[in-house]
Length: 108
Image (tube, rainbow, N blue to C red):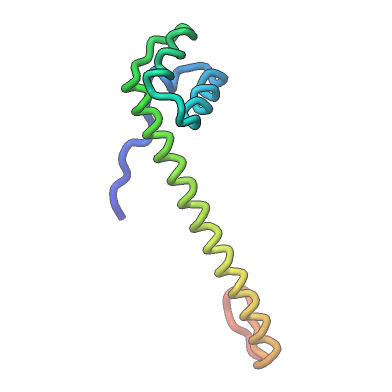
């Protein structure tokens, strides 16, 4: 398995009040806003944050979102496999008299 890089970053943006970060995230979702527009908006809110810092934050946020999406997809696949396994086990029980017992097969 690849070594995981440091995932906690401290930046001016991570230190913003939560309400302002939520508004920033909303602005990032609107593709009509440029990083420069967002940096200017932050200045009007009293925070001197560069467009580069906004861009770096957006990249990290997108990467985190992608990891969540990938994890959710894997979880769904595991859940489907478990459900399929249970359905298969129920079929085995009816046709062979063999049933799973806590991960071990028990023969009647």
